[in-house]
Image (cartoon, rainbow, N blue to C red):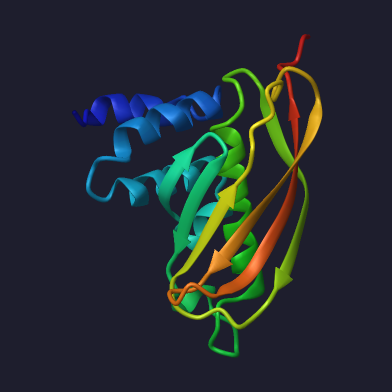
Length: 174
């Protein structure tokens, strides 16, 4: 059952353990009407620039993330299509949420490379699908994780592809 107080506590945990908080929050919100938008808002509070595209989380589990962005005037360019950097932002949100829910609670992840292929003009709502195999030792030793997200339009055409490299590390031992 949805408990707003628990949801607020979980959002507060984002700073100390983003992976744990993200899994816990999504566990509650995935079955609540509008939960994907609330989850997207929480992601935007954790990473404010990511929030500028107002992502909506559609699916989230280890090795999988599906995120949608609406086509609004704020994400458009002078050609009346979705701006290249808005698409890149969506690619980062999709790969990042997929990685964060895949690592142990005490592990850390940071993006170290992000590359895009722009395949056609993007118009309408755009959905980013990120799927990858989670390595067994992820978060136990420092390693780079290569992930990809395909960004599709409402017709299912791939408009862009994000290639991200995330550096995943075990907790710091100070």
